Amino acid sequence: MPPRSEPMETAAAEEEETRGAEPKVEEMEPLIPGLPDEVAEQCLLHLPFPYQSLARSVSSSWNRALSSPSFIRSKAKAAAALSLPYLFVFAFDRSTLRLQWQALDCRTSRWFVLPPMPLPAGGDGPLCPPAFACAAIPSRGELYVLGGMRADTQSPLQTLLAYRAATNSWSAAAPMPTPRCFFAAGAIGGRIFAAGGDDGGISAVECYDPAADRWAPAAGMRRGMARYDAAVVGRRMYVTEGWTWPFDSLPRGGVYDADRDAWEEMRVGMREGWTGASAVVGGRLFVVSECGDGRVKAYDEGTDRWRAVAGGAVPAEVKRPYAVTGGGAGEDGRIYVVGSGLDVGVGTVVPAAGGRGAVERVEWQVVKGPPAFADLAPCNALVLYA
Image 1 (cartoon, rainbow, N blue to C red):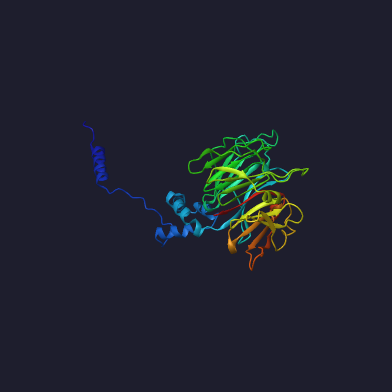
Image 2 (cartoon, rainbow, N blue to C red):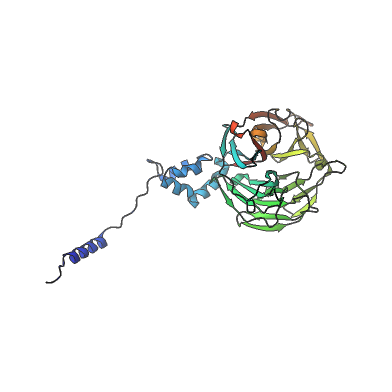
């Protein structure tokens, strides 16, 4: 009996039908029903931090749009107009030494806890929180955590961790060539500089390019210094060791000029009067004194002198230890003093008005830390636009 041919004929017919059929195009769901996608993308650009990263879970189309390189580029271009300043605070639990980053929206007094920072390479033992250095590129919403030290072996680390507010995420970057702790770090022209460290035995300076994820040597310090405080003003980084017990010798300080790739001695008046943690506001250098009730003073480059700022000391409810930073200029210029329990003194710097001899004034308000932060102590603070 000849074989039946119906299945073959059926298969041939189906194949012919498939060849002639139009290919199916997967329909993309709109980002926001009723709006063209290009308009919806403009709406997504206005999502405030940290909701942009959280919005990825709304739908696959939102996740695709928010993760696309074109959207991230648009966000970067619009950052100056659309981003708002947030205070990012690096803190640790005093009983467990657990590290924690959080961000404060000073407009709403609302805190956001960041994802856990990855454990630094070699940091599988207990870590010394103040040994890290931090730097930020505020306009790009990027912060960097560098170096550090194991508390059990006192071994310095080569850490470089990068956080990007646009994605609310951490990533490991190229480690520092030189392990460091208690050193100075700052951002100049979109690059990160690391200088000095340990007990002053390191004079090497290294520069990190985030775009290339690569380190390169920079001009070395005239002599190695451990960090007491450091600040970047314009394209110059100032590093001071501060006064040390028994105060029988003047403090040492150095100034790095990025345009000349060269170091020079810090002027005498600047280094003698630098007696606290610094904040740069509108291109001016301020210091919150570590002594007494936390008065603020400003450096006058023309006279190489520090002048008291009017308006009173850091509010008494903000308890030491302090982490200090600054941000903005003109009417938006502010000094942020983060204290124990992450209570924050926000000091608005009012420019000097009047004739010769007039001084700036700082007007304070306090943002109380939530009860969950009661055991936290700050060790660094930075302003980012997110």
